[in-house]
Amino acid sequence: MNLPLNAQKWLDVTLYPFDNQYIQLDAGRMHYIDEGKGDVILFVHGTPTWSFLYRDFISSLSKKYRCIAIDHIGFGLSEKPNDFDGKPQSHSKNLTAFIEKLNLKEITLVVHDFGGPIGLGTAIENSDSIKRIVMFNTWLWGTKNNPGAQKIDSVLNSSVGKFLYLRMNFSPKFLLKKGVHDKKNLSKKVHKQYIYPFPNKSSRQSLLKIGKSLIGSSDWYQNQWTRLDNLDSKPWLILWGTKDEFISLEDLQKWKKRLPKSVVVEYDCGHFVQEEHSNEAIGEIDNFMSK
Image (cartoon, rainbow, N blue to C red; front, side):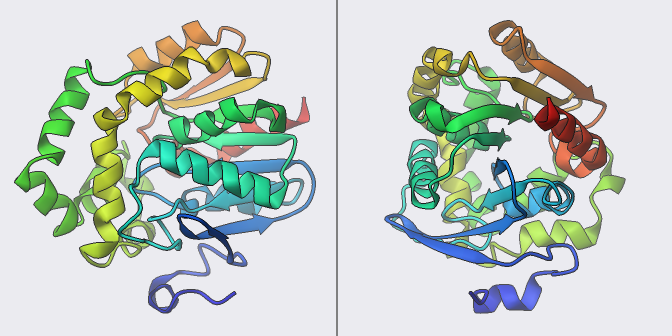
């Protein structure tokens, strides 16, 4: 199916050389890519990214596996309806509907950032469909008592925060760059592919809504955390950037304590391991799949 007109103007198909597919959900029209054959790997992004984050993973791993990557409603090449509430729990429902519509089974779930609670929330509800889990920097517990999260929430709920997100496109232009430890690992060419999906105020509502959900959905995160035992029997691979400006090493320690049997690989990089250590992470996932 053809790309939206605006995407035809900016999408770099040399960086993102995939067949674009769409599926209609109750919340809107979802874009996804589905490459290769074999065991299913389902990639779930956070904010302000989209399936482009996993482009190198899909190009490499689709030679052996069926690699599927979605764009959440309001992100990437998916529809950006203003009436969608944009909460992680709503994105999680969309992901569940997507899995059901494509009848996906024996899934290796790959999650990152807000995609952690979104994807793990779906996995908890559909544990029989999940075979193993790969997790980049993320969390799954209550946030309302976290001082850092409180500070971010205060800004996002102010007129200044609204201006920065909706008028200045602050999240992909500035916060994403802050999440890369070595700025040489984020070229201008690549960075533009994260900026262009949000060309105007209307298209940026999803960024503001999910940002407000950092604390706004705190109780939902905590509820998922208490139900994580639904996934205890699954193999877990944790790939973690130790120089993350947003999610700390204390959070990694919390995961290690909760999932003592998980395989943990640490990288000397920021929040976006996918941009800074893609080849190494791809190799770890391939090894994990082979076991």
